[in-house]
Amino acid sequence: MPRPLLVATAVLLTALLLGPAVASATPPCPNVQYSVAYASPLCVVSVLPPTHGWPYARLWWPEVWNGSWNLSSGAGIDRASDHLDRDASSVEPLTALDRDRDGNLSAGDVLTMWSPGGCGGSLPLYTGTNRTSLNSFAYLLLTDGNVQSCGAGPPDLVTPAIEVIVVASAFAIATVVVVLLWRRVPRS
Image (cartoon, rainbow, N blue to C red; front, side, top):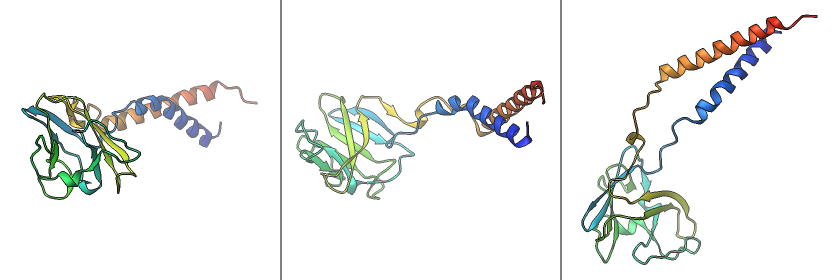
């Protein structure tokens, strides 16, 4: 077997061995990382790092107080920037506090929802230029004590050094297997 074919076979074998491990790696971080706490009568969503700036002017949420909204027509959907830097109340039950005043939903900001009965349900967030052209962005689960964060899980035990060792070992094993099989094939 020619040397380039030998290397190609070893690379293919390595990819087949490591493919399932790579595919089952840590899932991507959610668009918005957050924690939820209930401080009667408010359900408070604190935005956590590394959430990066999402412009409030392009961020939309349903009018949670009227109980129904229609995403395709935009009925019952409000622009988040219309509810900035005010306290939530029975009159305006969903607001955002832009703590760093950068105009974006980012780490350190707080969403507050008037909810005398406690936190519950979910809050869908959408992005778009207007209320009739929205895309799904995030779906916040409003349960007291809930934390959605890449840093909320156990520490990542797979460091870059371990990844290099695993890939190199898999390649070496695949190469040995190919060489052993190549030597067993009778030559004509």
